[in-house]
Amino acid sequence: NAGVTQTPKFQVLKTGQSMTLQCAQDMNHNSMYWYRQDPGMGLRLIYYSASEGTTDKGEVPNGYNVSRLNKREFSLRLESAAPSQTSVYFCASSEPYATGRTGELFFGEGSRLTVL
Amino acid sequence: AQTVTQSQPEMSVQEAETVTLSCTYDTSESDYYLFWYKQPPSRQMILVIRQEAYKQQNATENRFSVNFQKAAKSFSLKISDSQLGDAAMYFCAYRSATGQGAQKLVFGQGTRLTINP
Image (cartoon, rainbow over the protein chains, first blue to last red):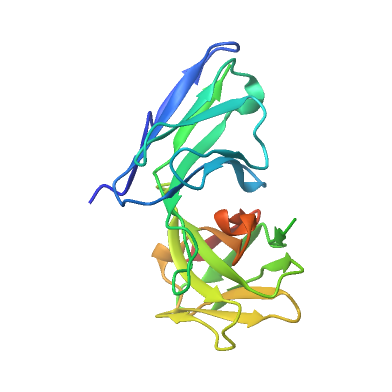
């Protein structure tokens, strides 16, 4: 029962390098999310995709791009990494809210990214 | 925009004792959902408990219960008979029930809970 799988788990980049974080879920969820976690700031939403074919900005989208490749996969790309993007990144998925469903998020294990 | 505030960055409790973690939120909506997530050192985010705003009864899951005060916009988590495995970061989260806000969770800053043996 894999749930939400994200790769890589750890990555070290130099300033200006690019990379893509991959995320896949096997729960047939419509909605997928990318959050970043920084000390003292909780989890902040970067981008989300309410359904296949749509993406929307969250609270902190600058410096990131996303692709909803299909219903299962949602990737996060850093085009030119900056030290301020050093963080732990979480992918999550959920069913959309509906009567009888609270729409809680199911999370991947997180990816620790360090930008030097 | 909705905001969630956890005013206690750190808490500690003796094993087997009871501890309460605080959470307040700001919203103009009447229908929404509230959650507590636990993040142990493994970094995995685990749902602890959820509360529907339209329900007056406080949610309970084994040793975990909430005190939901809708008028005060307060949603505290009580952990009874604390165990060493409860040591973790705890996050409070809010989700709208309708509109675009229903698509995402808004998290508080987190409270780090330490259990003293």
